[in-house]
Amino acid sequence: MRIILVGYGVVGKGVTTIIARRYLEKVKDYGFSPKIVAIADIDGAVINPRGLSPEKLEELKQRRAPTNPISADPDFGHPGMSALDVIESVEAEVVVEVTPVNIKNAEPALSHITKAFKTGKHVVTTNKGPLALAMPALTELAEYNNVYLRFSGTVGGGTPMLEFAKRCLAGDKILGIRGILNGTTNYILTEMPQNRVTFQEALTNAQKLGYAEREPSMDIDGFDTACKVVILANWVMNQKITLRDVDRTGIRDVSLQELDEAAKKGNTIKLIGSIENGKATVKPMEIPKNNPLCVSGVLNAITFFTEYAGEETLIGRGAGSMETASAVLRDLLDIRHKLANRLT
Ligand code: HSE
Image (cartoon, rainbow, N blue to C red):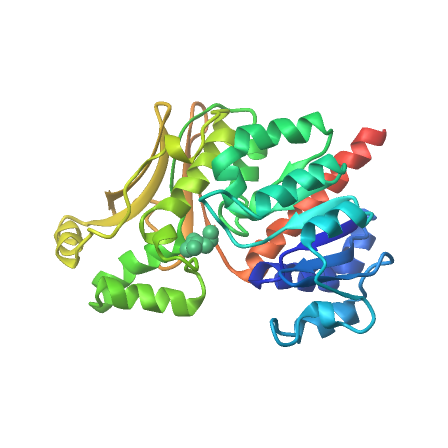
């Protein structure tokens, strides 16, 4: 499987690492041989139609844009070549799109994904922007072009929340979903009462840990959680909604005093994303500390309310370079599996 990687930040580097590390194992276990044939970054690309070797991938990781970008590589560098040109001109089966999130117009990821579809390439993305703004249209476009769109890293990072709902609960009916889907806000709401720090101090610590989005409003005003709710609603509940359909409140107004009041009752306050009775909502909610959903720190958790199996809760890390890269690899294997079944 030939892969074009678009975006070379934290997740992109994780993807090259996991593919290089797990290459031999995957070939042995699944007959799956992923080859990264191109990487497109902001100021150019590297291209090797035979696949960039694990050694070359390691070497590229030492480079730092803008002074020493990957496109300056003497063997395979293409300075100034755009991601759209790479997607159009390089032969590959899959585009892995991991550029930064933009929820205003979803660019440049939206153009990368549509270009990939139009040139017959499957897409794996961890980018919530295009899905939050245009998921119904994108899934239709993928079907029309007879390609797959996979996005398991967009919700729960490495924790397979979407797969759990779609596959493991396939025989049941999901009636509702509630989740702590954002690590940064969960960290802030955990730190404030535990370590008696202010909202701002807790946010600064979360940013240092590398979990927070570049634009903190994405996390604390609930946009990130709302994007994940949209993805869950479309993929798991068959609701054709976008970001504007989510009723959203962030955590800016949650005070230490409110957290202390909740604690006296054995409760705490969490930013909860939910889909209940057809309504998609993000808001801070008081929940009992002994509720399985009540995880602390940067952890994420999700509860599915099902008709027959009752409540099922999944807990795990919702972000991180290698965690999210493991979701990309999971999606690549899924596409490989689907393609193999198409042929039989
Ligand atoms: N900023 C996000 C979080 C990253 O804190 O959960 C993962 O989507």
